[in-house]
View: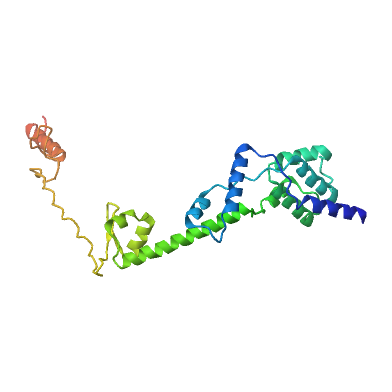
Length: 275
């Protein structure tokens, strides 16, 4: 019973605490920037301009778990869960092997892995099992919560503006300059809903005028038919009747047939039999 109380006390001490870990100068600046942002900006009073900046800002990187904290969590698992007989590693060598694969994760992730392994595992977990549990962990710190709220605000604002644009297009209230400035995806929707005409050059024009009159689709430009080329003087085949000098000649097929004909005329076959 005393041993279980000791393990419980250790668990309560290790898992909830967020021990400080070394931070790089870059991650420290980013974390401080986010700490200042979270302190200054309230989700209830955040403006849309602030929301756009926060929505696109990179979140501070998670800080790797300290060596001491990682060792404590792993030793807790070793004390609480039996090792399989096939396990060759033990003691410091085991901690070193696990640290090489898991040591880069944050204190929150290692604490989550330790807690879930104690709940689920009957044996000391393999590295693959530890990685699987860590993969289930979801970030939910203050910067992420603020960013999710900001992205929700940006999305809602975009939807409101989109509906307003579609309403104005339906009423014929948009000038050509305003249409040109619209996002391409909105132009496609406007064309699909019958508010805009799409043209072959990629441009869009209003289909509805301010007075409600509908603009018919511009008629196709009349194409002047190409001038027919002179025909071959024998077979009337188009496009094969001029040589490089621009002189009219027979097409290749007719020219070959003419040569065969001339050969037969000049060299008639003797119909008689020799004596």
